Length: 481
Image (cartoon, rainbow, N blue to C red; front, side, top):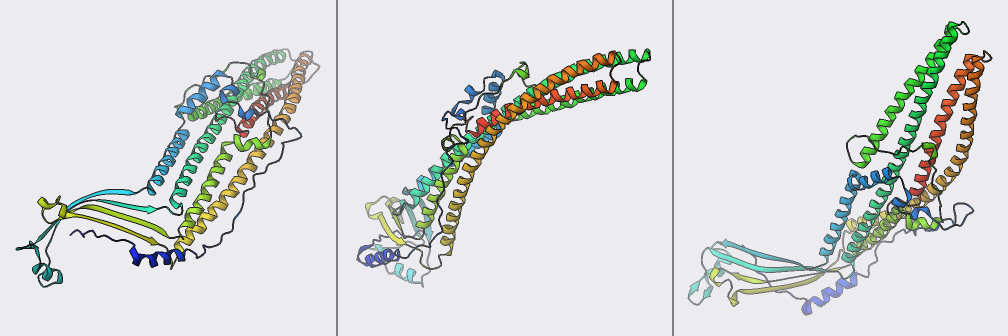
């Protein structure tokens, strides 16, 4: 059976109650231990003060290899992790809608029908027995009840609790966008690093194949020397073992090429297939000159720093929301509609009813639950402060390490290039001396092995140089624009 709607107001009797509720608000909320974030960073990475920052360049401008840019462009559309992040943005956007709806009035329509039969020897039954609906007409038994009404409820946001909750949701939405940008930055860097690693493996495979040819020719020469009794069978076997070792190295590199291609395919969001890449001589690739700018630019360039900053702003708003739970809330509800025992009389003006109810509510006894929420919100705020400071510190160290790495790798590459030249000349000299019986075959083998390893090291150092270039670009906040 539907309860009949009644009218209620604060009126004269409600004034003392309201005053008492407002007086209770003078009770202090629990004190908190606060911490202010430190936003200061060093003035420079070294002695330079150049404000030119490579991280501000768009990735299409920074990477000029058409095969690499095609891979990045495909990944930005197909990468599963990035698409998952986009859905997180959608969730955050829906959270804003939900929070916005909380501080707006809720309006609902209600329609229903019921029937009620009370006992004769009850208070309600005795009243109905002695009461006429109309002159000469008693209450029907059982008594039907039909209702059609519109109901409104509204929590008045007098302390900005609901508005702060919406602002926190909006800030987290902006944080999710920065999270997406950070994912893009890492994705671009990972694809570029894998691409340069793949080019380096191609170069190493080419070196191995050329060394196999050289060593095979040397083996043929040694066999001829054996037939003329200039060397023994031991020399032949040692040269043959060297050829077999180099041939086995070829298949190790081929396997690494397959794995690197498939890693790129995974990042691009496609099943394994050959990765198109540049055929340019790997040793001719020159890393871009990197400009670190000044550390304060990281606060704007790095998506992870901006995300941590948004999370900190949201955490501060959460504390304000939790604090408002200690304050009285003003709830209003109203309804208007028609209520009758006869459907034919439902829309009759005499069947009109309405109600208006308003009141203050404030927790007074046993506030442990809201205290816990308050303390937890503050703990998350302090946690967000530490996370923000840690993110800034990590960003600065990443840039400083990569800038130093670029400098040291360049010096190392120059020395290794000289080493390769020296060993190539040593190989030619040892071969000439061996043919004239002025050098032992072991000197030839060791010189060939050292030359191969040095050329491998030179290629790996070139890969490290290119990776350092990419990692510096990422550390400076580049790649998401």
